[in-house]
Length: 347
Image (cartoon, rainbow, N blue to C red; front, side):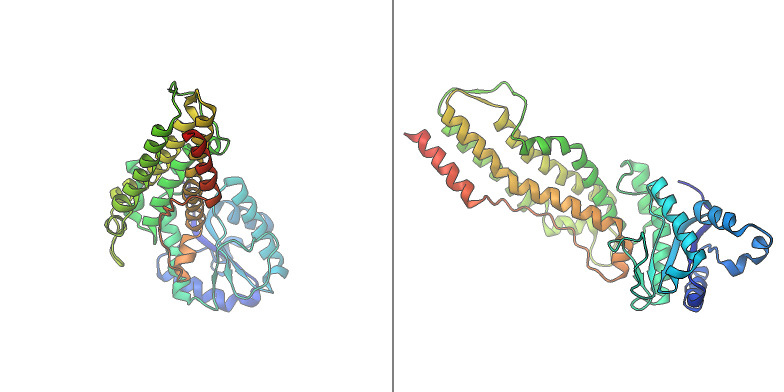
């Protein structure tokens, strides 16, 4: 984890100084180290301020807080600070800018999808405490790309940034599914390497067995693994801390269920069929996994997006849920196609 001289630095237009100063004072009250220009008059005296600003916002502060307003986009020093911070974020592939809106002015280079807080909605105390939470997350050195180790989990549980349970779960799921991405793509290419199995008959018995097996995978997941009770045991009741070991385990079970469904379909595609009609029916059957796999893959993507702006979302009052979609639905058109293929086998 990189060390920084200051935790945060506000970036703002002089016209907005009064609002910014309220947040600065509250951050200091909470023990946050703030680079604030008026506190640095002696240090800045006689320096080339372009070089000094570039060095400070590029290397000396952990987070930059742009106070976005109509004045901000016209402030030359604010523009310099913003450009330096954006370049650093791109170079380090890390979160650097934590925008705070004063009004709805668009800032070039600041995407509308970036999470932000708003002085019109959030109090000074709420904004300051959100910054504290971001710093706690940073001290844990835990992101969705961090390797899951007992040490990294312990660091996250020790710092306990707001929503840490969610971040831990997302990381386990995101990394697990990333390892299965190739198999996931191959499923929709309808490809699997030969598994050595050969079906010499019409395959009806095997097809029935596979239907039962897929149903059992889903049933166990719905009735046993991803229940309200197991999620509460892992993430804790409202206001209570979660259990990191159970959260990791639940995330691993999400990935394992995803892989079981992939393997179920992969076994179908990897089997050789002596009967052409049996092959056709089996390949259609393998598509029964499509909607479930897409749903689980999609929720993992959505979880990751939420995790990237978790503190902002929680501070804004958004309710974050960790649902596991287990749809087990089949497209009616696919069912009709499958039934027609089975009818051919029964003749």
